[in-house]
Amino acid sequence: MDTGADQSTCGGNAWIPLYDTGEKVRCNGYYQGDKTQEVPVVPIMSLVTCIEVANEEPFLILIHQACYIKDENQTESLCLPYQAMEHEVKFDLTPLGQLNESGTPGKNV
Image 1 (cartoon, rainbow, N blue to C red):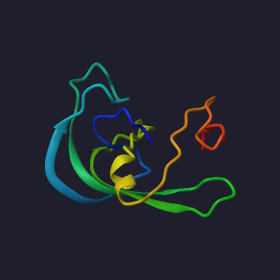
Image 2 (image 1 turned 45 degrees about the vertical axis):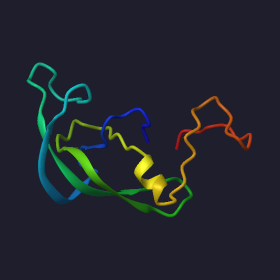
Image 3 (image 1 turned 180 degrees about the horizontal axis):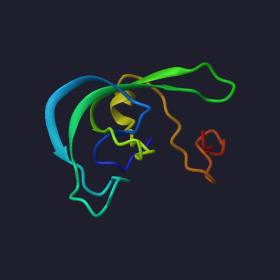
Image 4 (image 1 turned 180 degrees about the vertical axis):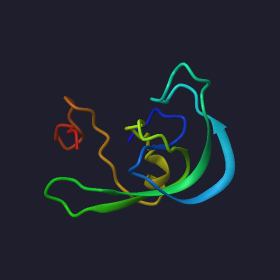
């Protein structure tokens, strides 16, 4: 999750495209590919991936209106939590080394 991202971005082989909106955006600033090339123009899509957390049941994340960087060298994705929070999905966005309002430290999952 990235609360500071301007746009959700799904990258690499982990994401399965479901729907292409037909819209495109120039993706500057966040791109791990060849930085000597002009920044890519990427499609805006709906995509899904499966998340596996140790000792937890795997779950799917479906993201709508996200930039899609198909490049297999793109190993990170930026996911804005706010749209999901409007649909009552709960996130603990407590940074590592900080305590949340329950006194529990943030953790990297």
